[in-house]
Length: 85
Image 1: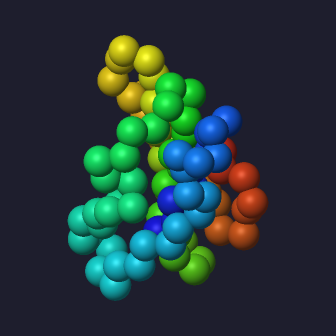
Image 2 (image 1 turned 90 degrees about the vertical axis):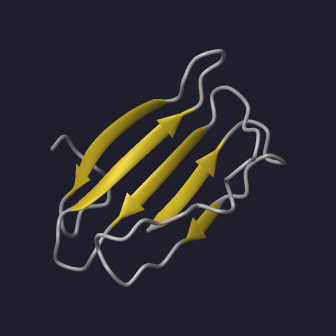
């Protein structure tokens, strides 16, 4: 799993981090992003992929005074950009 954080204020995001988990059904904690205040408009993109399999891309957008929005897309094998599932 790869997590990418993008925001206009680079001091608050730390770029790309890799989180490895051997079993596919296991819970992965994103400790680098826990308890970190991200500004409104920040996007945290999570990619879970495995060679030869369809991957999933989840984008969490931080919103001001609302709960974060979540968007889910699929990543076909060999594709660079995610598409609708």
